[in-house]
Length: 148
Image (cartoon, rainbow, N blue to C red; front, top):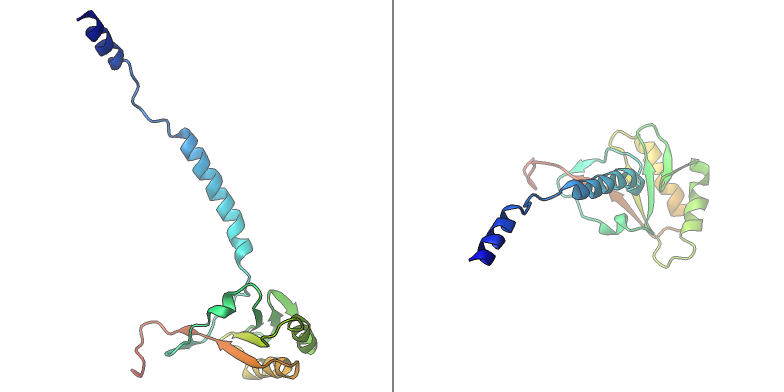
């Protein structure tokens, strides 16, 4: 009985609290890392895309090697994230597509951009030898196909 009572007394002294300090430290480090890296992952120019009822998904536009031309509401043209002069757009697109077999580009135009700016950008890339031009849009929220 002496051994059992000693074991019972030893079990009363055991601390069953979990030390969460190391876990909180690791979580804070991960939070800081994600807060720093997330803005770097954004590789698009901020544009308010046109909303349409029958939007077509184009997952190829999100690929790393996709050639994306963006036209902002003030008429500025971007190739990827870099602002480019409209007179240099055709040659820059030609250089990007030189080693590719698929001559496809994606155009992201702001819904309030002037049509002439978008048309000029498409004309410039078409004269550069682009086979397919895809216009990116977003699906209109809360509307049914054919319901308007």
